[in-house]
Structure formats: C-alpha cells, structure tokens
Length: 298
Image (cartoon, rainbow, N blue to C red; front, side, top):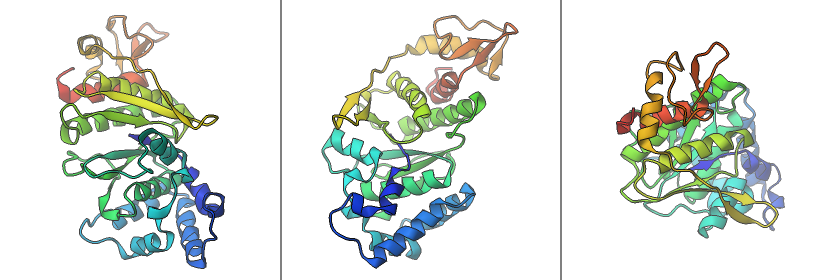
C-alpha cells in the first residue's frame, strides 16, 4: 500500500528540476492539461474523468493515451514523487511494479490527490494504463485486480475532525478486508510505503497496517523515507490479538457509542470513555471493526 501526496504535481510544474534534458513543447502542453485537471474545485469531476479514462481494460482512452505519449511516464525517475522515491529505495526496482505484484495507492478524495495517484500509478506500470484500476468507491469484490496499480479514492481522508477520520478508517478497514480476501495470496508479504500524503494520516495507516498484521498469514511491514539520509526507516508495528479485538469491539456492533464497558486493554486506542460515562469508538476502532468483519472476528 502506498499513501499518495501531491509532490508529483511539482515535477509537472518544473520537470527540469528532476530530469537533466530540456522537455519539449508537447510535454509542456500535456503537463498543463494534467495540472488544470488537478486544479478543478470539485473532485467528483476529476473522479468521473478517471473513471472514463480507465473503465475499458481492452482499449486505453484516446485522451489518456495522448497524454501518456506526450509525457512518457515510463521514463520518469523515481524522484518525481516522495512515494515513488520511497518505493524505489525500499525495493531497488526503479519504482516499477513487477508482474504479479499489486500496488494500492491510497488517495484523498481531492482533485490533486486523484490526479497525483493516476500519474504515480502510470509510472509504476511503465505507462501501461491497462494495468491501472480506479476505485471511485469500494466494489463488492476486488477480484481480477492482482498485478495492477489500484487507485483507492478514500472519502474524508483529508479529515477535518474526528468523525471524518472515523469514516476514513472504516473505509480503509473495509478495503484491507477485501484485499486480504480477494487479492492477497497465502503467506504473501504486505508492505506499506507511507512517505506521501497528509502527515496526519500516517498514524491511521499504521493502525491499518497493525490490524492487517494481526490477521494476515504473511509478513506485514511499513516504512517511510528518511529525507536526510535517503534511506527507508522501518516503522514498528504491533500485533493485536484477534480474540481481544473480538471481545472488546462486541459492544460496538450496532454503532459507534456503547453503554457497556468494552474491556479495558484497547481503551484509548480502539475506544474512549466519554464525558457522560459511555464508550465511543475511535477512528482506529472503526478501522478494526471494518477490517475484521469478514474474518469472523466480530
């Protein structure tokens, strides 16, 4: 999983900062088209554009094909974005997604986030739009997405309050559950690259990684890129006990607030006591509840 920021848009504004040779007029015009899409005030318009561009897996949209031809993302260096740079430093694969592996790009529901995710995905696939899937919302199944770069549009990831974070984490938990069920293979490793995107979301994505580590058969790890040394740093991940999670989240089956005391071990993490003496699910708890829903944990 790769958290997406908007640093790749800086490259499109000033490509000479990352590549040695001068870009031609065709590149500049195409870059302006991409940047104008990222500046749209309504993200739904951008989402609809991505849907139209990527819906046909047998034939690339003519509009997108022209942009890919002019911008040639297959030749961009990994340094065009923080997320690709992290992926490159950790894997030594020149920010390219190998056949059979799946990359999930987690983006906010914003115009800049969606456009950034698309071009990061196209770099990962060497400019092959047929290997890019876009999820404007979560489908019932993620079957058939293995070996592709999947753009996951997460509502309210650009959170402004606790309710937004709770909704975003619930969405991410559901995404994680479906990835484990439909895409992930037995004993396959899962890796989180968390250098891109809103810094405030990192703890929540770490929470998702910890939840997946607790129920995935393979190894789950997470890393960020240290800017000073240009080396990746491994992030510590706890392993939660499914039985504990199952018991303590039972009071929240029907909603985010409960009159029953959950148990105590996950207090302050999955739930908190409110001023009126009740118990409220936190964003982390919402993610765990959604993640474990299909694994018979709650």
